Length: 189
Image (cartoon, rainbow, N blue to C red):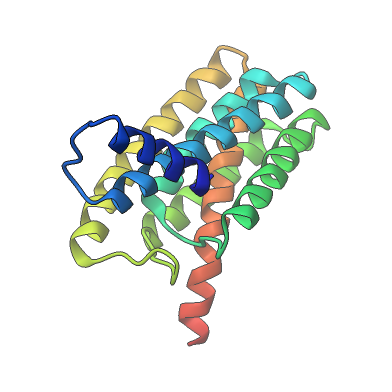
């Protein structure tokens, strides 16, 4: 993806378009955009293949919003990140499809996961460090996001869209789990 981004930016520069910032910034931004689009496309394909397209979309949107501000584990390589994401989507959707969830377990796990996120997030990782200002801003934004996800989950439950609520809960649980990985390294020293 980085090579494709390089090629696109090179063609833009050759075309005479003015470059306001460093070429590396544009290449990085375009590469990140391609990675996000690949993850979204893969999630849609998995959701469609499992007959759970709405659940996959709820899961990935909630996960992306929460993970953007909670911090936690970040993989050393884009390929590993992609593979972890694919496995997470399959496990989340598979657990919903296999009826591992019920409303009570969902609510209980949502409360526990939200508590973990509210107490400890955001946490930087050696692959994505946070400064004091980022920590403060991310914490505020995360509170709002978690509140919105909880309200949306309640709406899903009351409108009898239980599997969509379970998808939202899965995203919150995974975010809390990804937060606990670097927390364990901090505690262990």
